[in-house]
Image (tube, rainbow, N blue to C red; front, top):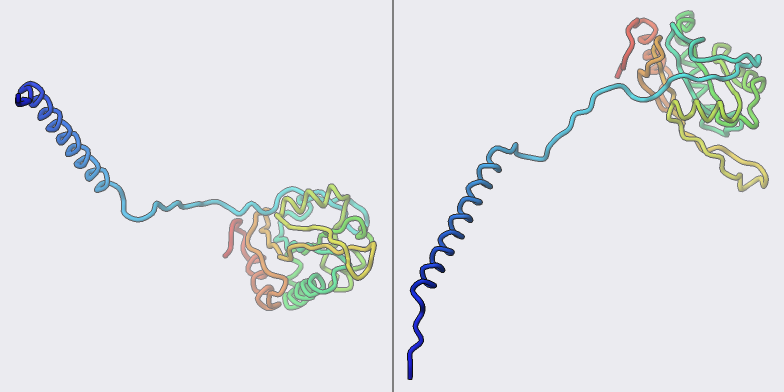
Length: 220
């Protein structure tokens, strides 16, 4: 019976291959450790800066049917509120808060403009808007326009508005919409926003501060 022997050349080649593989693995491990040591610990963080993309050019109709733009309100802080005359509760509540804040400001209220823009142009004519806001305060201006005008301004102010069927009155509809008040500075730049349920005194204080401040930019 013959014994099978291993070729010394094959044994040497196998050993060299094994040693080479070990050296490659060791080098890869060292490189990985170095890379991990140089990376900052924790998840990477990003920092964003800039102004809120709220507000901008618009073209609407005042109660007399005259076309007005954002330029007609330049030079004074501008309080912008969206809604519609058929709104059952939210819009009237917000307008009452604005009216109370304007009353608290007294003559100082002449230093700003307040507008109520419809999200229901099909029913809210300029004349109707004028009569509606006059029932809350003489210094609030009602603005309307064509469906295209309203679509443009709601997009500019990032306002959500959608017609929904009125289940209690077939053929009629309501409008679901966001109900924030937007305060713009005298240069038309966004300053801050308020919920429709904001306290009238808190709103009046913020409006007074905006009137007294000549600077543009955010006011948290």
